[in-house]
Length: 117
Length: 113
Image (cartoon, rainbow over all chains, first blue to last red):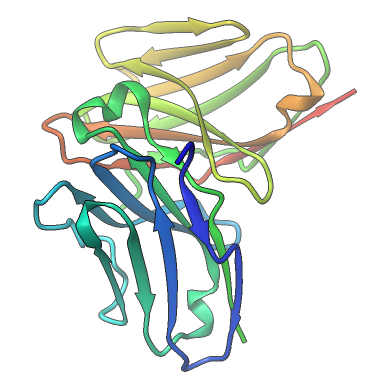
């Protein structure tokens, strides 16, 4: 597609429920990233996929968070047993590859606003 | 441990004047620095970047300055326009292709007509 697509754009869930957030990166981009922005905070790195390499999961805040990327394209971020502190905007981004990262950055989607009540 | 810091949460300037957004970093291994702009309900969009071997990069109304000895960079917007009102994030990438950007907390710029 022309840009990074995320769905849903908004999600309200009850505490304790599981949620799945979807990201469809730009076609041909081999690198895919998940970040989140909590209220009043900066962009917090969560996880990064590059091609067929093992993902960098170093930013995942707990084992309730997981992500997968199927077929090197679409990615799903899953949060199990959601807590109120999980409320944030979850942003997905993609880039051509990690080597061009510094020069061109990534392209972000519009995000999914998750509210846990 | 915040490796990229934007110490000013907000900045207000008059239309037509210069906006200066600041960013400090601690990691001397960063090889590129980037600025992103974010409007409400949208994802951040890439504005401009600078290599660590440069001290200045200019693109239209936007100029980024890098002071490596001070581990400081700044984004200048001249002249500022009301449409520039947004949250600005500074980011850095680490040499050796760790593959991800590290972002600051953001500065909200308001340009008053």
